[in-house]
Length: 284
Ligand SMILES: Cc1cc2nc3c(=O)[nH]c(=O)nc-3n(C[C@H](O)[C@H](O)[C@H](O)COP(=O)(O)OP(=O)(O)OC[C@H]3O[C@@H](n4cnc5c(N)ncnc54)[C@H](O)[C@@H]3O)c2cc1C
Ligand code: FES
Image 1 (cartoon, rainbow, N blue to C red):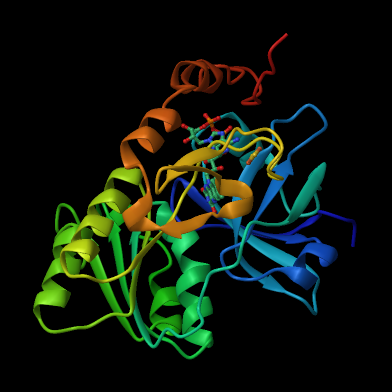
Image 2 (tube, rainbow, N blue to C red):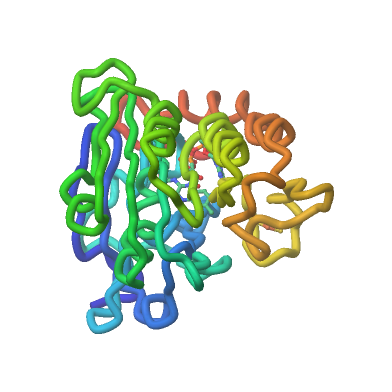
C-alpha cells in the first residue's frame, strides 16, 4: 500500500463522496472532531476536510466531501489506487465530551458529513445522542443508516417534506426541547446561518451550544491568520483553537462575511473545467 493511496471510494449522492485513504501516521493519532489538510497534487490548493472516521489497524482515514469547487472536482477524478500528494494531520482540537450525559447534534446539508464523527464519537463515549439531520430534499439525504446505528434517536427532516419530517432543523430542535427533552449541550454543524439560529435557540433555553466552524484555511497551524474568527470579542484561529467553539460567543455575521470573500474567484475557477477532458485547468 502506498502512502495516501485511496483504498475505497463510494458516492453517497450525486454530490457527496466517501473516500478511505491510507495514512497510517494520521490514523494512529486521529480523534473525533479533528481534520486534515490535503493537496491532490503538487500544484494543488490545500483544503481542510474533517475525518469522518479512522481505522488504526488498517492505517486508514475516512473523508466525506461535497464536490463544490476546483479541488473537490479534482478529488472526484481520483480513483481507488491513486494517491494524494500530501495529507497533513490530525489538526485542530478533538470534540469535547467530558461530563456530558445527553446532547443533541444538529447537522445541516453537507454539514452532516462533519456532524457524523462528532455524533458517533460521542455515542461511543457513552453519551446519549439525539441527532437531527436536515436536508433540502430527499435526493440530498446522506448517512441515514450510519446515524441510525451510531446515535440514540435519529430525526430526519427535509425542507420540502419529500423525506422524513417536513421541517427545518431549527424547528425540530425547538419541538424536541418544548416536548421536554433536556440536553447538556447542543452541537451545530452546517451552514453558518443554520448554526447561528441553532445557537440562538440553545441560548433561549439556557443550554450550552457548540458550533463546528469552517473558516478559510491555508496552513492549518496557526501561522497564516487565514482562519481568524471573532469569538467572545477575541480573535481566535479556527485551525488551532477550534474548529469547535462556544456557539453563544461566535460573531456569526463576521464569519458569514469572511466566508464569501473569495466567491468571485471560486466561481471563476469552477468554470475552468476543460470541455475536452473534463479535467480542471490550473491558472497559467
Ligand atoms: C475544519 C474544516 C473541515 C471541513 N470539513 C469538510 C468535510 O468534512 N467535508 C466537506 O465536504 N467539506 C469540508 N470543509 C469545507 C471544505 O474545506 C471546502 O468545501 C473545500 O475547501 C472546497 O474547496 P474547492 O476548491 O473544491 O472549492 P472552492 O470553489 O475553492 O470553494 C468552495 C467553498 O469551500 C470553502 N473553502 C474553499 N477553500 C477553502 C479553504 N482553504 N479552507 C476552508 N474552506 C474553504 C468556502 O466556503 C468556499 O466558498 C471543511 C472546512 C473546514 C475549515
Ligand atoms: S489556517 Fe492559517 S492560521 Fe489557521
